[in-house]
Image (cartoon, rainbow, N blue to C red):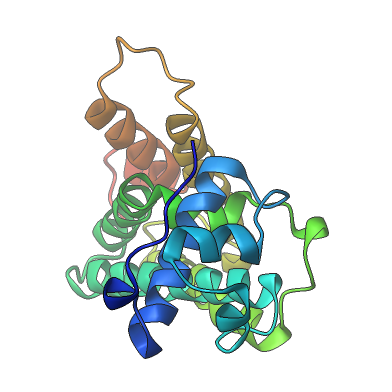
Amino acid sequence: MTTSRPDSADRPSGAALRRAILDEARRLLLADGYATLSMRKIALAVGCSATSIYLHFDSKDALVHTLIDEGMTRLHAELEQAERAHADPVDRLLAMARAYVDFGLSNPEYYEVMFLLRPDQMARYPAENYRRARRNLGLFAEALEAGAAARLLDVERPEVASSVLWATLHGAVSLAMAHRLDVKIPLEAYVEETVQRAVHAFRRAAVVAGQGP
């Protein structure tokens, strides 16, 4: 089936064209993967020439890196909102963990681009962008450190603990996105169980036993 180009009067331009290119690239990446993504395919779907795309992005990888940046920025906003909503370090961490999983399940196209594309297939992610993306792990590390300072969490190295927590949450999101869960398991129950166990794995033994900090 051939995809027809939009009528010239309906074709986006300027900022609207840039947005359309990013949205279509994100959709194609989730549907077909990085290897088959091409400027020509994006242009056909958007209704512009491949040359027009290069006016906004130097390369396919630059386009993908922009999508990663967008996703990381949106995730950061969600995590910050969850962080600000709770003074208690454990409640804060639980809220942030839920926000992370909810973001992944609600934004599968972004999540695919951010975390599931093979980095060896594309140009190296710019160091400045990487540092910006690391802010998300930094928020988890800060919450873990606050919990340790309040003697609520057993955390010696927050930067390591944050990666361990992220690995658990990422695994849960990835399995759900791949439809690898037993259909008899309610998604809401799966998410809440994941969040609770991921965070409470860091609880101090005395606190878990009800002895207080």
